[in-house]
Image (cartoon, rainbow, N blue to C red; front, side):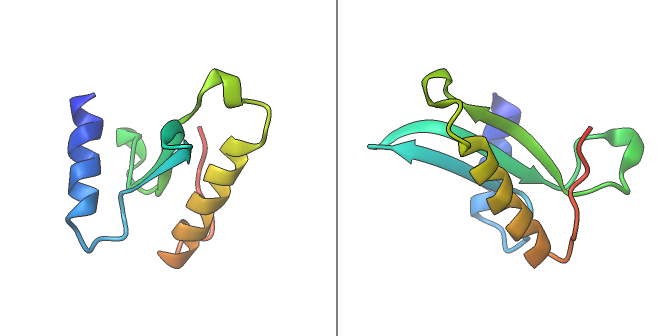
Length: 88
């Protein structure tokens, strides 16, 4: 939890395009999240950016909300000059 907290705090205070964190809310309640980070696979530092911490609350699953988070992350990756996001 501390690693994610530090990463989110850093993303708020930097001009760097990564990391980016996404929260999905419904009536003020967080129902989903995802992160777009520079790397998460130490042996392949050449592969970036990465999607991490993708989560949708159980009661909201099956509504394509995860897809919406992924599409937003993909658009932001393209803005940063990356045309693909590796998934492993």
